[in-house]
Amino acid sequence: MPLPEPLPSVVTLLQSINPIGSSRLVAIVGRLTDREQQALATVVSSVDAHAGGYNLGIVNYVSYWAGPARAWMLYQLNVNQILTSNPPTFDSRSRVIPELVAEVAAMSAQGVLDSLADAMSGKRHIAALHGAQTDRVRRAAMLTWDPNLFTHPDSHQPDGQFVHLVVGLRRETNIGLATAPQARLDYVNLNLAAFIDNGTQNYRSAQHYLHDPGILTKSLISASVLTDRKTKTYAGMHFGFVLRAPMELIGAASSSDMDMGFDKTTRPDMLAIESDQNVRMALITDSFVQGVASLYMRPLPTRDDVVRNTADTGHNEVAVIGSMGGYAVRVSALFVKTSLGKPMLAAEHDVDDRIWNISRELPACADRLGVPLIRIPDANLDAGGTYFHDRY
Image (cartoon, rainbow, N blue to C red; front, side, top):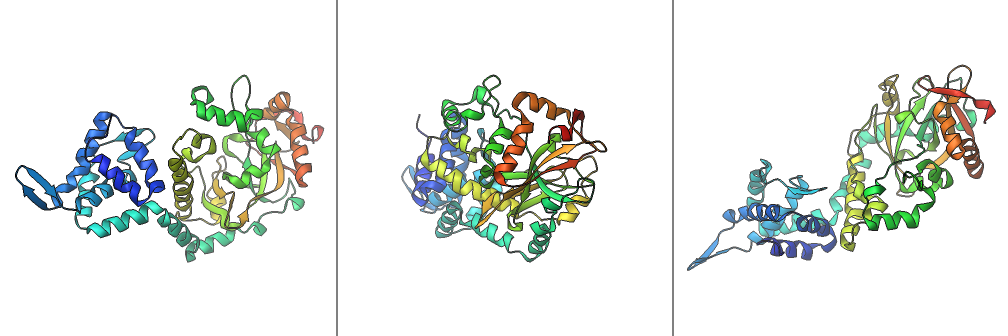
């Protein structure tokens, strides 16, 4: 069914300005219900009252300004989360709509077009990212994340003082394959089949990362700072990687869980669902850059402030960009957690050993990388019955 007027001309104008930058928005409009599309058309046309024009008999002709203003209105409805993508919905009752109409009413047609061209190019996200990275206050905090200020794994003493940036690994993750579209299943079968459990259809993420740690350089990493006093990891993860991350790649940090704010549709397996090449390009370029910029625009606490404010039984979170601008994260060690006193492995470690022989996988990965495997005592650990030195 065709879009109700004036949406077709609005869509055409946006595509003429930037076919890639507009593609995702156009796709959202096309996926609305008929009722939502009609409501959207009405709201977009509400700018016409400010357009001026002339009347010929029974036909009213609005001025040229109306076309760009309608397009700007549609774009801003999406920016302000009135028109959303996941799932595609439109709320015509939003109190922000009159404010948007008033804003565009004060702009010239050329000003509207220039604003749209700049917004859809992604340049604003790049400019925002550069501005945040070079901000003087942020730079001062960033210096405290210098990797040379962390404990070198070769100098690690389990019962001494230490500070490490780590990412924990989990045995498996439910990535929703049971209800996934065929395009996503095809991608997973082609790229991840060796790490999908035949029974549960869960993704054996730890095994994948241990076999190919280079994935980290292509990832947004949710890491944590561990010290001899603050040793809890997210979800009690009891093994993983110690990272050496250039301070330029520390996007954001918090003394507790934080919302990364990233659009999950930018993940490779989710991109496979999108059949429109322009939409995929927009997700890769615009949405991802926007996500990175949003991290860097947050106030960055110092490393010591993050540690100091982390609850004794809680964990902190550090958003680390795997690689960017010539910088890249690398693995400097693998870690395994144990109980205090006599170092007993986690009860979950015993389960992992039965399922996929973790006590063989971890040293094998460390040997391939030429890095040590270190022990981190954790008072929060649910210990099992296996002595650390019986396995490592």
